[in-house]
Image 1 (tube, one colour):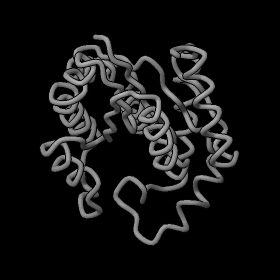
Image 2 (cartoon, helix red, strand yellow):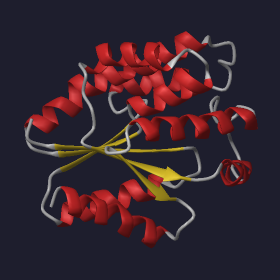
Image 3 (cartoon, helix red, strand yellow):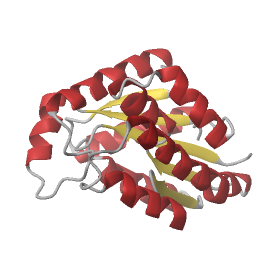
Length: 206
């Protein structure tokens, strides 16, 4: 595949949406065909799965059910959008990918990292991002920002200790994948975060 696969990770409230938009605009101006997708979702089937996962009324959802739903949405996205676009030479930017499942379901939900990796290896055909940006927002700041939201979905409604486990999980994952995952301080200004992301990309790819 001749394209470039970029993913962005971080706890809720880290500012991923803003940075994804800025990155897409930057790469478009560079002349690249850029495809921006999100997880779960990104396809008609995936968006329906997303609504089930995030529905606040589905509090009884089993942890393995949750993990398999994420993997199902991901399988559809990889096969319908990501792989075809990469083969066409596009830059695909994905809001979350397998790393999120390893952290949220594998570590925070205690399913186990290896089990979640195996599930998602089947779902994605072993697809790995070329580079991943982790927007590093300390748990206390993430919790503060979450409290400012008017409506919370099922995942956002989790207890504070869950988000602390998620953050710790990301740190474990980063230690194991330090070459691929680039840590960006999410407490910087929006412009500073964007500049750091661009600097990493230009050093490695452009």
